[in-house]
Image (tube, rainbow, N blue to C red; front, top):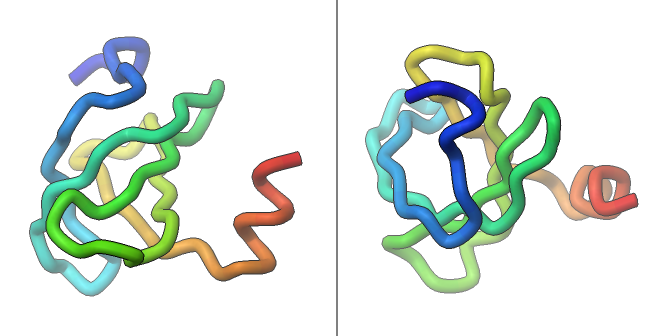
Length: 71
């Protein structure tokens, strides 16, 4: 998928940094990063992915990282 094709609300499949394939919903699209939430688990925190990675790999954001990235 082209990095400019990502849209808020879209569901995608991506591998976590633990190499587990999961479904995510995009909650924010920035210049370089996608911010996602799990489509499989409630209250699972925020995840981040670099749009240029192919295949897409997501990592969980810590609470400190969430605050830093939301600015």
